[in-house]
Image (cartoon, rainbow, N blue to C red; front, side, top):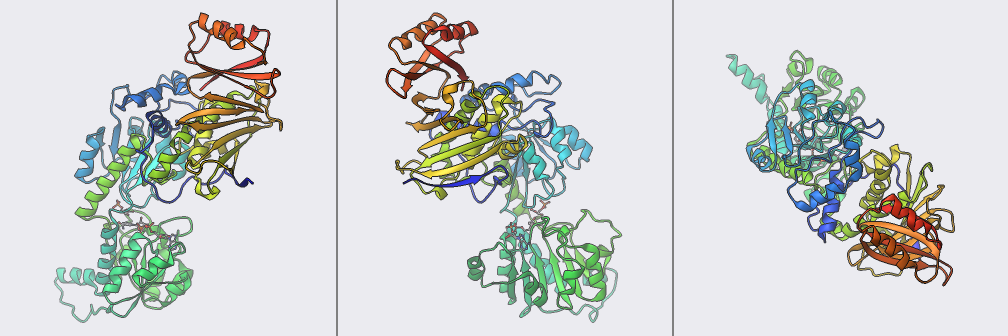
Length: 636
Ligand SMILES: NC(=O)c1ccc[n+]([C@@H]2O[C@H](COP(=O)([O-])OP(=O)(O)OC[C@H]3O[C@@H](n4cnc5c(N)ncnc54)[C@H](O)[C@@H]3O)[C@@H](O)[C@H]2O)c1
Ligand SMILES: O=C(O)[C@H](O)COP(=O)(O)O
């Protein structure tokens, strides 16, 4: 008995968990196709009319199979000619990588080995927008705002934004996704540096180090004024128990502190392993003597520390923030400091950076400040530079990234297994859409994955994205990639639902077959319409090669390579010879032929693979063969 699970995925997020790169794809054909998929980024958000070139002309990759794949992007080539004003990179040029903030030298060297590196610091927003149209990649730290305007100004050339650090709140992720631009970060290399800075601020604040230092430098000797508080035995609440928060917790325990933590998403066993109790937000802030902030800035955490939450804190609490300034309502913090609810604050990050010099918060005598130095150790900066350079180069090569922020991250072994099915998925999408009659608005697509494995074991994001690409690209000037596939489908009003069905097949393979059905449309080829009235095709991977195995109600067996002529005819002898002759006369090479039928001597479907595209006259002659009732030419 087949069992199934289904999802509707027009709005489902593409992005999740962990991943490593895709170098282990099984065949050259498969590998190059994946690379092209990642590379063919969107020139324009689909919400706007395409008004400039896309980047698919940037043939700077030296590996020849990749060039072949770029050549197959026929739609891209056609639409490029419409936009002669765009500064296209020639086929031999290297990618241009703009580095807009200081990056460790090891990372710069790594980038120089791959592309032309332009280190231009302190650019104004206008200068950044001006430069970006000539750049394929941009590397930033927290000081560069990568806004929607930047993506618009890039005119589709920008393929990847690398954030040399953790926080990506300075990058407009929605705009990046709409433009098909991958965003990657360097999430691990500065963790220890940030944690050490948090502990440094905690200790400096508790012992009034910066105030006493300033006092002495102004000629004073105020031993009684700067009596501090001890940390041992005190409770510290770590708000955000991720990478930095965990490291702060470890160090705080080493100082003899009682550590509690609040993080709605942190696993309890990680906390237990460090000897930390996970508590509610309210419990954390109400019981802590020290509060150390380590959560990201998100719509949920924005100004989460405000008048109301300060009022819930223990009087005399001390707060450290090395996360993001925006999680604190800074005016409310000044009020809490003035009223004594908060005894002291130590801040490395601010809502506006740099903050106004006359800011009441910065000037407050109970506040210790540093200019966003959390990640600024030699070691961390070399680390993030290498981490981000590798990620950006990998992305420019078309590899899936281990640190992608706005694209699916698929483990290497899953990627390798799925690779041939990814190729099949795109071909099925391309075929299905070409079978729809012009003028039919496509709205609803159903994809059914049949597999011997448990439905939960099949990660369909890549397959769905490729089907979307296959469906959209032949009929529009949009360019679809892994980053923008779901968004593009949604913008086009396509509702893609998925079903996973368990079948009796070989469990060694992740997928047995993929079926694509388009409902409520007319077809150019009536035989592609199933008994239920949908344009329906199904395919399998056989010996690593994608095959069409079902068309409407007809079983066929056609390898999906080259171009395809499908004919429906009266099932009678001599048909293959007749059509073969017509093609031969026009020097069109037939790569294969296959006949499928429902009932003997009734109707048959003939599928003919051709290397060249037959001219109109040849196609007309095929149509004139008396037994042929309908035919269609499809580009794969
Ligand atoms: N000052 C600096 O130079 C510096 C350096 C590194 C990191 N950071 C910042 O520190 C923060 C943490 O970095 P990280 O590498 O540990 O990131 P991380 O993603 O590993 O950890 C963040 C944690 O916050 C948790 N979280 C999310 N929403 C929360 C909420 N509402 N309440 C409590 N916890 C919540 C997440 O579950 C996660 O565990 C980020 O904002 C990052 O930008 C600053
Ligand atoms: O999020 C981060 O990684 C830190 O805030 C570091 O930012 P920086 O790269 O600007 O120092």
